[in-house]
Length: 144
Image (cartoon, rainbow, N blue to C red; front, side, top):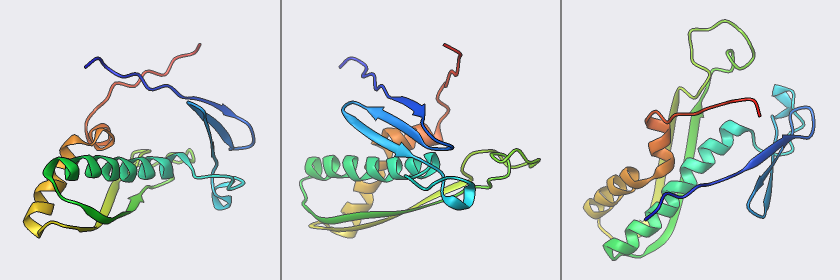
């Protein structure tokens, strides 16, 4: 299969409000009020956490179908820990990004615990978002 290219565009439309265009979808991003925004949408870090959860949920469905069991309910709670000092321009030894992401997977499925453990390991290995978060991906930022 050929490589897929995913494209988005984004524009600053307010103090911190960003309007993102993804295919036919418009997504608003903003900072919460306590970080100076107008809270018109999730911030970019929250979207990373949602993307990680969404990827595990989607890949989880595919892998469950391949393994031959039904999912009755499937939910993920995600917590990301970030020191905002670098983002705010302050001196810190911490990196700008998340220090840790923890996902708590809640699943009710027609499978025993051993099968679910094997399933989750496979899901983690096949999730593109997790792969991008744990491995270095070249990112180029250049003026147009």
